[in-house]
Image (cartoon, rainbow, N blue to C red; front, side, top):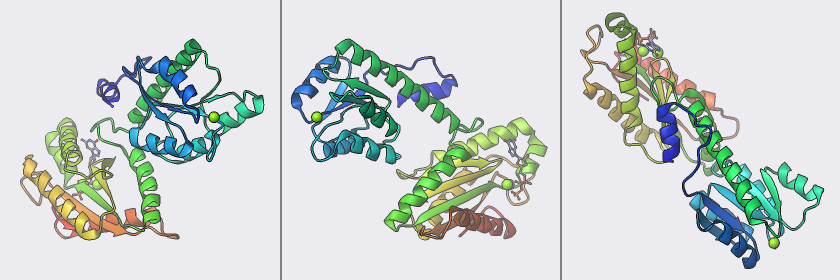
Length: 315
Ligand code: GH3
Ligand code: MG
Ligand code: MG
Ligand code: MG
């Protein structure tokens, strides 16, 4: 999302981040109701439509709308059920949902808000009111996205931070457990970095970490892979659906990548350049195993890489 990127690079969160052409999903089993909302928004927004709960979920996963206007009463799967499903999925849980319904009892409204909707509008809709409410919720959504992104980025290196990594590890652990697939973890530590700081100074040390981080983050990763700063001069890379052989070969290419930056390190005991040691571990997550075991295993391998000469990969 380009708005978000500029927010992040400028380091500022504007009071209101307004999307140029928001993407809305309108869900209603009655085409005439969809038509009414379409007419309100078609000029300034991209409008997707769905006439059933199931279709709404599919469109939502494919198109990632910025906001959903959701009918409550629908045959097969009602709006409440759709809302529950979308809120339970990490990929869709942050999309604001506004219920649009003719059932305007306080109980109905409460139920809608309890399952995670942000607002409740009654039919027939008043165009000015629905437009104003949608605008408010889009602005709030953009602001919370910007804050969330900001809280996930490491201040020095501008790559994802440990907090973001921990969240993703948690989610990928569960996803790989469901799928019965391997989850690999690469742990990276810059060699003799204390000596680098001592020799070149802390500012150059910071710049060195920035270059290492950019190089790791810009490596040729696959869709769900993630490279993050774990803390200090340590980095972690998460590789879902990847076995040990795949992770080992990726780790070796990362090691080479950093060596090839050829950043001089006059005090390194093992090379003339800045190098990294890398530990790799893989597991198939299952009931009774925990993420800490995977982290611990990668750390153990990293320790072995340090013990056996540094600038190497152990897995
Ligand atoms: P090894 O090869 O065994 O990993 O040795 P090392 O010197 O890299 O390891 P050690 O853990 O002794 O030192 C890590 C150093 O990293 C010490 C710390 O001051 C430095 N460091 C951690 N975070 C930062 C940072 O943000 N900026 C700078 N410039 N230095 C940092
Ligand atoms: Mg209906
Ligand atoms: Mg370290
Ligand atoms: Mg180190």
